[in-house]
Structures are given as C-alpha cells and as structure tokens.
Amino acid sequence: MVRGKIEMKKIENANRLQVSFTNRRKVLMKKATLTSLLSSSPAPATFTISLAADMESMASELKRLQLAVERVKGKELEGMSFSDLISLESQLNDSLLRVKDQKTILLNQLETSQLQEKRTLEENRLLRKQIESMVGRGSSGPQVEPEKNDNEEHLSDTSLQLGWGKRKKLKIERPAITLEVQVSSD
Image 1 (cartoon, rainbow, N blue to C red):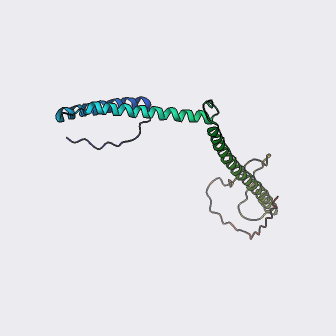
Image 2: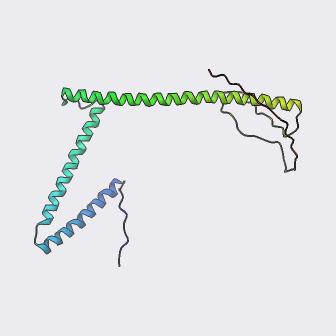
Image 3: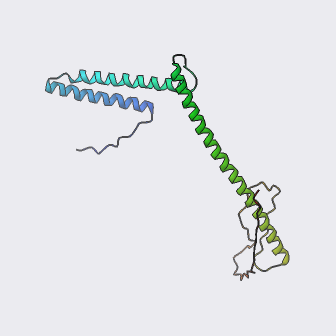
C-alpha cells in the first residue's frame, strides 16, 4: 500500500512544531541507526553532533538578531564602538526619512481626497438646486424629492428614491436639460 504525497508547509503552532520536530528526529535517528548497523559506520553519532551544532548556530543567530533589535530600540548600547554607534545613527536617520516621506504621501492623498469631497458636495448642492427648480416649474417626468441634510459635511447621498408604490407602465418625457457647473479651485 502506497501513502499519498504529503505537502510540506511551515507549522505555525509552536506546540505542534515541537512535537513534529521530535517525531521526525526520532524517525531520522532510527533510520540512521539501522543504516549504521547495516554498513558498520558510526552515522548516528555524527548525525547527533551535526544536529547539535545546527541548533547552537540557530540559537546564536537568534541572540544576535535580538540584540540588534534592542539596539535599534535604543537599549543595550553599552558594548558598541563609536563607529557602530555612528552606523546605527545613520540607519535610524534613513528609516526616519522613509517614515516622513510616507507620512507626506499619505497627507497629500488626504488633502486630495478632501478637495474632491468639497467639489462633490458643491456639485451635489448645484444638482439639488436644479432639481428643485425643475420641480418648481412642474416639469414632466418622475419627480425626485431631494433629501435634506442639516450637516453638509456628511458624505454625499447617492441613492435615488422614486415614489412609486406598485409597478405601473409610465411614459416619461424628458425635457432637454443643459447643466453647466463651474467649480472654483481654491
């Protein structure tokens, strides 16, 4: 009986990772032991030493990275040389400039969005006036009652509500409308 192919992926859960590592290590050790018995070589000892060296290497790399993070935070600076401190300061200045540049980009986008909102609100106000004048003249066609907002800063309402209760066949006459909107840019 053949087992299906197992997809290899990173294990996120720390407990499952430890259990999987332990089980895989046991299987590898068992296979290494059988191989060494069949070939008369000391493979398990070599394998164990290699695994321990890899673990020590990973632990030292982890400590080095944690120290670097602490130094970026401004902690653990006691053992640093003058040139290392200047290098760290340069890295922090570069990072600060990138953060300021991103902040400027976001503020510009916000300003552009606010200007667009003002233009849209002004256009909405002009269209409401035009609708009110059409309703006041008694023009034919469906009559749309504009919504009244006490707060003009509120987002523009884009819904259209028609006052028809049941479906009816209506003949709608559309008068020719010319709309000219002039928006001054501040």
